[in-house]
Image (cartoon, rainbow over all chains, first blue to last red; front, side, top):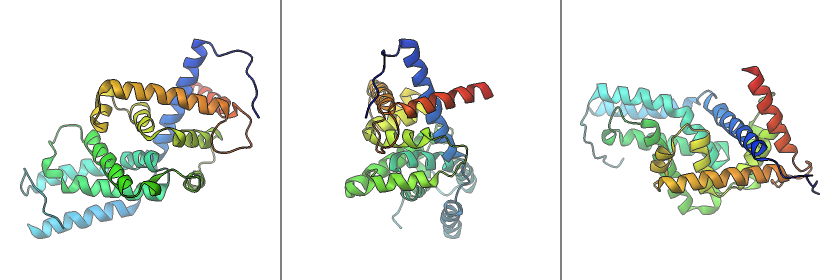
Length: 56
Length: 200
């Protein structure tokens, strides 16, 4: 089911919509960026670093 | 472990500086991986692989240059090489999309976020990554072109096509869930943007 729009959005409105999507897109990305990093990441890196130090 | 060619032989000070910068980039790698994979678990596996590839290749990184772009390039290459091995696995299927939605437990998250994720998942992968890099990752067109190994004009055209397609998907309600009225997602996104701009 689709509702038909009465008129096509003006250029300004189209720009506004694009900006709104852009804001939301950044927010979606930033939400993941602001999640705490799972310990596993740091543990894996630490193991590799310890291995390197052990080789030296 | 395969031997790694090093242009900078054992240098603990340099390694520590590299490690600090790499650790700071992990959240960004996770976010980029999430947009490529859709599924959070697969995305974290990808981000971990990319992190380790970057660590192993640290000797070839020129300190002081753009490590974010460098690691994103590694992650992207890793994504496509896995995808070549198992095309099916990395497709954003409905099941993965549902898991992604469940993973979003922010009570403030407006309904439009689901639709935005779904809409993104419907874009061709080249358009999706270009839009994310430029529109969310904070990369210039030139940097995104370097990451995607294509011409600047190609990135520009992909971003522009992605924006139009995404808007079309959201306005028509043509994402992969039924039950919402057409245009509802776009209306919710507009309302959310308005709230954000007023909050500033």
